[in-house]
Length: 388
Image 1 (cartoon, rainbow, N blue to C red):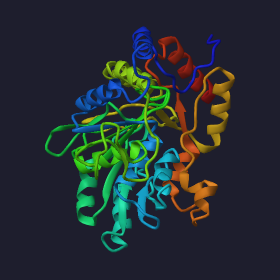
Image 2: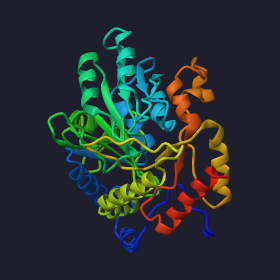
Image 3: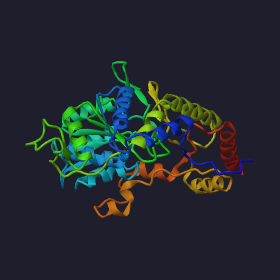
Image 4: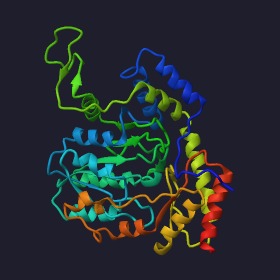
C-alpha cells in the first residue's frame, strides 16, 4: 500500500546540492557573480554548443529569443499546440501572430509535413520563426527542419524545456545533443522543479551565433552594458549605458550553484528515466494503453511518460489513480483552444490530431527517484482499473 501521494514529477535534491547552495549563500555574491558564468560554461560544454546564457526561467528564454530575432508586431511565427502556453506567449510578448501547426500522431511533435504545407501556402519569408517543442523529451527532426528553414527563410527556436540530455542521430550517422544548435538558431531550456535540472526557477538559451548570443545577454539585463568596446563614451570605471529596452531576466548565484551540481547527475537522470519508461512499456504490452513511440537512434529524455487511453476511459482512470495516491496529469490542453488564442480565430476542430491526442493523453509519474515499489503500485492500479 502506498500511503503518500506519488507526484507526476518531482525534484531530486541531494546533500551535494544543498552544500553547493550553502556555499553560494556564504560567498560574496548572491547575483551576477562567477557561478552564473560557470554554469553557462559547464552547460555549453555538456551540450557541445558555443554559447549558453542563463536566465530566470524558460519563458524568459523564449521571450529573449524573440527579441534577439527582432520579432515585431504582426510578424508571423509557427509553433505546436501541444505544449505549455509559454512556447507561444514568448513571441506574443513581441506582438507576433502565432500560427499553430498540427502534430504527428506517433511522436506528438509538430508534424513537419504539415509545416511544409503551411509554408508552401504563403510567399517565402512570410514566417519569421518556427518554434518546435521537444515534447515529453522526444527530439524534433532538426535536420529536416533546417532544410525547410533554409528554403523558406525562417529562424529555428527549439523549445527543449523537456529535453536536456536527449539526443538524435542525423543522416550522417552523427550523434547530435539536443541544444548543440548544429541545426537550430536557438535552443531554450527550463530548470523548473519537475525538469531534469531543477533550480527552483531558471532557464537557458543556447546558440552558436555570437550575434544572437550578444543580444540575449544584453536584453537579459535591462539592455545595459559596461563593455568598453560597446560604449559610446566613458566617464570612468563606473560608467554603463542602457542601449536597448531590456528586462531583468537574470538568474541568481544560488540557482547557478544548484544547477552546476544538478548538471553532474543529468546522465544518470536520463538513464534512470529510460529504465522507468522501459518497465512501463513492458507492463502495458497487449493492453488498450498506448505507450510512447521511440525511434532507433533517438535518446528520449523522458521528462514525461505519456500514455493514451480510450477517450471515454481517460477521466475515469485519472480519478481512479488519484483515489489511489497516484497523481497523473493531463498534458497539454491544446494552446489554440485557450480563450486568449480563440480571440484570434482559432477554434476546436482546427487541429484534429492535437485535439484527438488531448482527449486520450495521460502522463504517469516519471522522475528518477521514483522507487520500484511506487512504480509497481502505479502499474498495478492502471491494470486494476481496466480489469474492473
